[in-house]
Length: 234
Image 1 (spheres, rainbow, N blue to C red):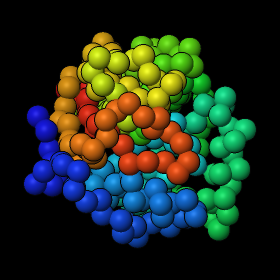
Image 2 (spheres, one colour):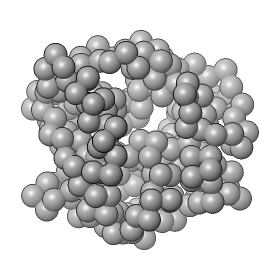
Image 3 (cartoon, helix red, strand yellow):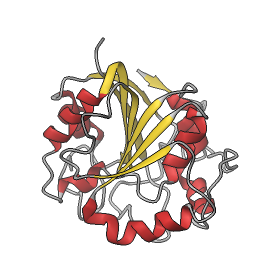
């Protein structure tokens, strides 16, 4: 099942570049808005006010910023990062919150294999945006990580993964070299934790991308990106 907010997902598909009235913005957010489609992604997620959300590998909180905006004053977002990356991420977070903390956000530093403590449960949504491919070369027990996420979600809760698309034939082979991963590989792997496949979306598809170039560089290019969701059965 595919949900699209555009009539087509061809090269000419626009990305809404207007910020979603977010606060705690940093200088990099403007150009990220141009290629990451946060408005489109939030539309696909359809987050209800009061939602409990975990943002896995949140980085400096770019996606977290949008998630907490959607969850509202009664919501809660747990922004996870691995301790292995905090040396360069912590100053970026400090820049984002220099004028005050992101409201209703709790920052968590835990390894990928066990990203959420058992006290964080009954979540409505867990997201991983543009970093699942990194787990391929970091010697992470991804099966264990996905099981922990499964346990943290409420029945009916969703696990949404966004990443740079690789060729189907590349599967998991180009996580380090191109910072890409194939959609089919992610689906097969995550379902092993007990999830069922939920709706996907072509909102961030970009047909002009041949999937053979490096996806993670500065400035970051617009790439073909899949958006897939998994559901914890009720």
